[in-house]
Length: 267
Length: 187
Image (tube, rainbow over all chains, first blue to last red; front, side, top):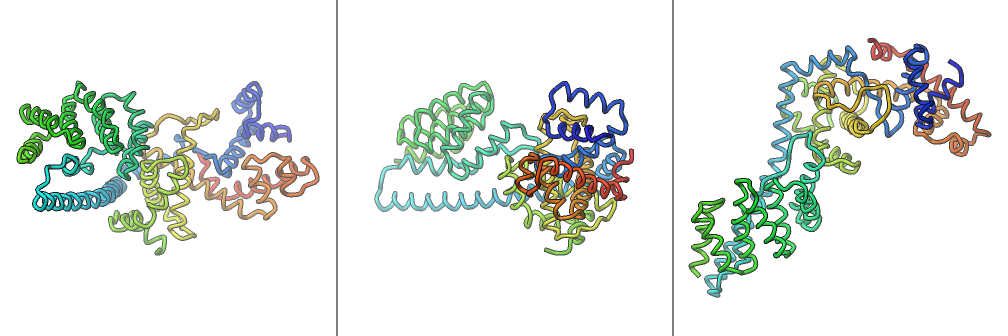
């Protein structure tokens, strides 16, 4: 090994060689054992001690095999299950908290609503009914396995934003993904609901119509949400028409639709 | 936090309460780190689980000693795993076979060895003189020789080059003399 060789390796690792020079280095690695050994060590040092890089081992190393065997044994598999379980419980506790808090709010809002009804004999407020029935906390989750692809990761992020009531930013993501992933039913729901929260009622209506026209069997969920959208705008008669469709065809949430209809008709 | 062995024994004995404890104490910190470094919450979860398994399998095989607090050590392992993850996706022309998706156990097994090597190199770096350490840290992070001259106060780039060369040789000697190096390189 000459000083020149070290400089060559140096420049290779820093990525400053031309393509021809790089090929020469790769060629030399095949034929020159000493050069190859030095190169390996230099590369390991460089990749390990550079804060941005990482030095990978060969998966063919015998020690990799030893650890693999251990990892696939019962003991480690049991631990894996425990970790899985704890991780899921952790998610559930946050979710449960959200849910019970939501139920509390829902119950409170019904009490307030009934109070108004009794004392002021006011007409039914579509907005209040919307809030009572929309159940934002019961929406399907985008959370997937650890090896989620880029789009799935984006959706999880958007869902988090949505749950934090950052509807504007979450909608931007949902709308952009919806352009390419037209088969994902949950995506329509989140998009529509975020649009409603941002008072983009016309857009929300289009979203729900697209959902209804979606060939998937779950596309009919769009009727329920469209009925709620009309409620939100106090278009009670329009809402009743859609709710009647939900009930007569026994679509998604038809029991709730019945209940809602009876409240609207009581008025 | 308690003695590192308390956690490591808990892991190899499949103690749910200890897993819960580690999650409680450590997950928020790891999550914050990953999210602040180009990652998402799912990545943090993935890294966290791999770190737990990595420590468990390594401890099961060799009962290694953690010299710092468990918290600090675990966080370092997570940071390295995230660095590893970020480098997986880099398209680099090296002689290593990267890029394909490995099954989890191969991935964790490889990460154990890589973490061990990382610890060896870091420890050896701590054994050389302060001046050498300072020069090499700059060099490994791709600071140009011209900038090294300015930062350390050498007279010329040639002097800087020679200094890097000497310090790196010292480091290589220490690494190669360590019995862990021999073990890591047997094929």
